[in-house]
Length: 259
Image (tube, rainbow, N blue to C red; front, side, top):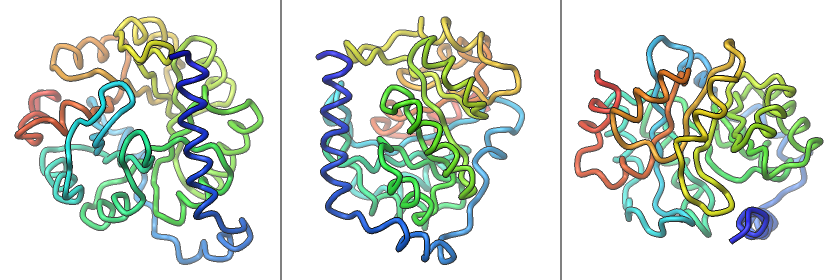
């Protein structure tokens, strides 16, 4: 599966699903005064020591089904009790089996900041994320044109949300730096093969600006890997698969962070 095909297929499905629930932007803007108060994702990620974004994910295009997760709120509470700093909730339905209802349930269950993990490819989704109470929104450089990336980033920050700008290679990292992104996520997954390689972390993390919050994403499941990305300059890790498959996610969080 080529990079373009993998990404374009996912985006095609996302656009179809967005069309089913989309309302005019002016209508959603008029309701912004009722949006939940934000909890400060950047502040949580700026604390000293390695921070953890713990992810609620049922499935993925590369691994298929990972965990049923009948009660995402209960899992989120376990993450919070284990010492996670943020909770990431997949809301993409077709490939990741996530939902907006998962996001709402998790946000109500915990006091931590929440990342809405999805393929944000429309302006509507940015405003929708703010209405849902997303403290952190994901913008994937590979999924957006330069103008979309700039516009969605600007709208997100104007709405008070923090933005995790995700990159997969050095060129995308340059785009994130040019954007003056404050939080940059380095995904170790190769979008062409869907394989994970820690070499991606080595190529990109050390070269990001010192004042940027650097998040290592994908494939992290051991304390040794955490120490590896820490040495490369990562301030935070995003962990999903090993946590959702663990019989004791609280203990695993403690182990990963050596707390």
